[in-house]
Image 1: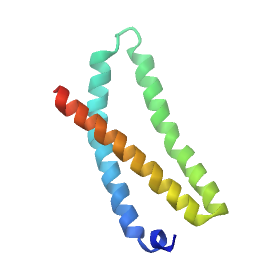
Image 2: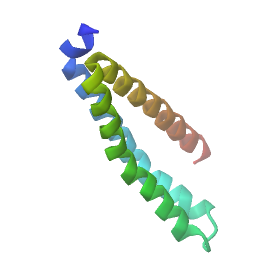
Image 3: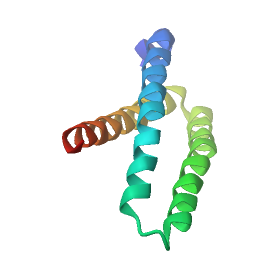
Image 4: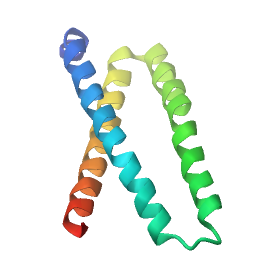
Length: 101
């Protein structure tokens, strides 16, 4: 538990790498969405995707700060867990896109 508090720089590096991966995957995901979705529903699909992405940041901030007020270690574990889940999903999407291309 104390390990996570003392390794803030490790968490920052992991979050930086996660942000970098998401930044590189986002254009590819948009390209895939444009090429695979019917043009009649493309605008609503892009709108739904952008809404989910925009809402997720403040929602995660609210959840993490709520847990931090209860137990700081629990909130750090949740943040680390969610970050690792997102990293795995983004990596699988990147590998899938690489094998398709």
